[in-house]
Length: 166
Image (cartoon, rainbow, N blue to C red):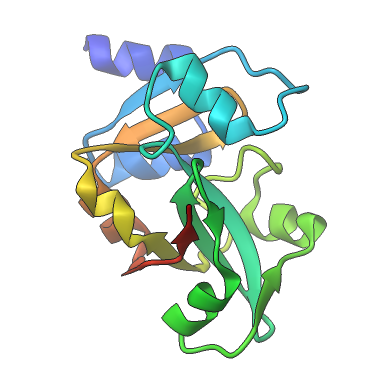
């Protein structure tokens, strides 16, 4: 019961609703979001006291005209060529922020790979497998969800591939 109350107290998002519906094990972490932070992901890692290679950011890219989600550690950056190759594409660019928000149903800086308005093809950086749990946005700034990389991959139907650069 305490776990459900903690979830409810932090508020629900489409991501937490999807996790609960899937009966996945997860932990929510709320923190004070600083809108002036140069990197929301690194600020989240610092606020939570979690190494930056365990906190993953959700980026939306356009691969050959199809929006695609890339989930990479906040300690690195997305390799667009590697992302395109991971999904059998030729060229990837970062998606228009307005299109990413409209398609996922989340605001930039709070886009979660879980519970998106329209499920997009997803690629999770293979480095996630090196950790027992990883943190990703729970669907709004200042709220992260911690879960196993295997659950994250299964719930998003993600392809695992080395798509991050240090």
